[in-house]
Length: 242
Image 1 (cartoon, helix red, strand yellow):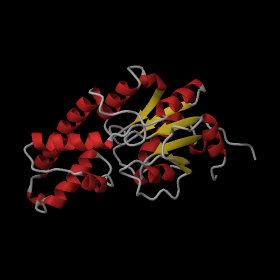
Image 2 (image 1 turned 120 degrees about the vertical axis):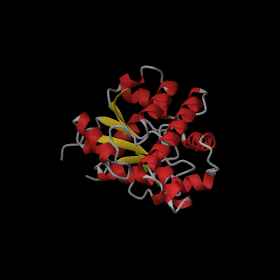
Image 3 (image 1 turned 90 degrees about the vertical axis):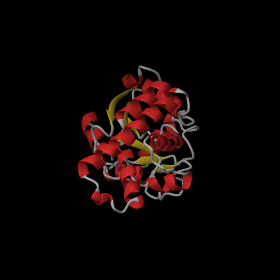
Image 4 (image 1 turned 30 degrees about the horizontal axis):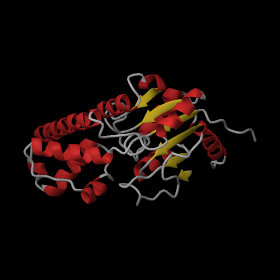
């Protein structure tokens, strides 16, 4: 059987490219205070809330848990309030990134640079907002980051959140590549399930917020990408079940 070539790497953002969740949690709490809410998401609570993909979805889920009378609020007014909170949160997160509060995870930048030089195609498939993606990538890589990641799918283009595979299916469609010629990189069970559902062999690098998730279906589970080489990726990809 002819070997399947590895042509592209597809990266999730939050928790995968960078340890962003602590900054996101702080930004949520800042937004709650600015909106006059007495909510506070501590680390154990936020870890549980991360099982809900998407910032607005997370706010909505929490609100329904705290206020069972949510149906009494006019639908339009509720949606507007959630959007306002999320806008405040996004602004706080962007400021934190600009202030250097978020860094790429160990080995990530080196692997991206090696893959780019080797002419592997690079893409981002995330359900975070485009503002969050741009803020992180500008800070970590510089203003030319879009020349490296020429395909970016995010919450604005793929509204169905992980574990739904929409964001990965759209990424593959735009790349015009089969899933078998790509590797996905994730950090969470929702992300892994989304990638697997799209047919993508997936490497997982858990973090403190996701270490307890079930990664049994991952191609590899690594503490980080620090010691990972392109030769490793090609070997793991070649050994992936077809």
